[in-house]
Image 1 (cartoon, rainbow, N blue to C red):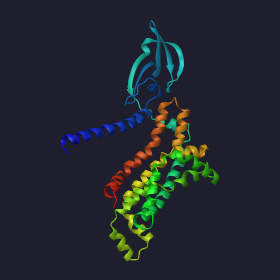
Image 2 (image 1 turned 90 degrees about the vertical axis):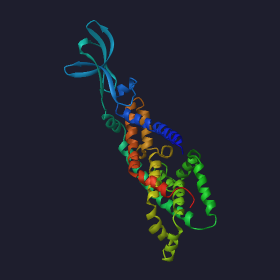
Image 3 (image 1 turned 45 degrees about the vertical axis):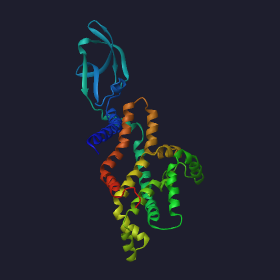
Image 4 (image 1 turned 180 degrees about the vertical axis):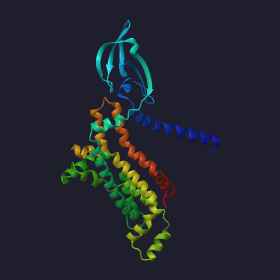
Amino acid sequence: MTKVGKFIVLLLLTIFGLAMVIPFVWMMVTAVRSQLEFNKGNVGFLPIEKHTMYVADDRETIISIVMVDGDSTYVHFYDEVGQIERTFVKVPNEGIVEQSRLRVQWRNFVDAWNRAPFGRYFMNTIIVSLLTLLGILVTSSLAAYAFAQMKFKGNNLLFTFFISMMMVPQPIYLIPSYVLLNQLGWIDTYMALIVPWLAHIFTIFLLRQHFKSIPQELFDAAEIDGCSRFGILWRIVIPISKPVLVTASIFSLIASWNSFMWPLVMINSEELRVLQVGLSYFSQESSTLTTLLMAASTFSIMPLVILFIVAQRQIIGSFARAGLKEG
């Protein structure tokens, strides 16, 4: 590739990268901005506050000027969240100052957390995510090993059928699933959130492609030594597949953490709401408090960001070593 081609590729990657990062940065900055400042239309990338203040007895109060009357001015007084406390108050002009400063409102996170039972939402999401992950790793490892190494009639046809199911949008099977789970008595229980997701087609596909890339000599040597099929999977395949298993785990956790439509339909009680559903209800109840909504969104997504930063080497390594090509 020529230098011009590399420059164009780098430029495009930078543009698309910024397009993805800028909304996330704006969300975090808005989360630490005052609601009054946001209502005034100051939505930059720094939490800078510009206020007209009235200073008296070493106390600063946010005001808006209504009318100047000689040496005095009629003003409205605002509280810290931007609501008018007193109207048409006459104050001396010498106490009015313009103020601009960088101010981070960490209290937004506390206020957002206390306005809804986010602790319960987090606990439900963690329980569902971890139990679902455990089930996916077990079922996907077994299925992927069978598709990759075991020769049986209809292997490729069955695998193709599995892959084709990835093309089916969730709304299509949402109603039949609800009817089935209702007949089982699982609606509004953890079972409805966990059991249907204990097998994941993409994870089976990812692990199968990796297992097929493992040298056949390892399997032959293990069989000669008398190792069973399950023993080969447990003692040989799993230990050398840690990077791709970490990648599959990350994808599973992200999918469970961000799940919205399924738990919204299957769960009715507030005690079983997961994080994304709880955040949706919170956004409806606090639609006018944008800074609190951004604060709730920030601490809801932050565990996934930290998880990705910690495991990014394993994720990159799994694709670099295993790939998605046919072995």
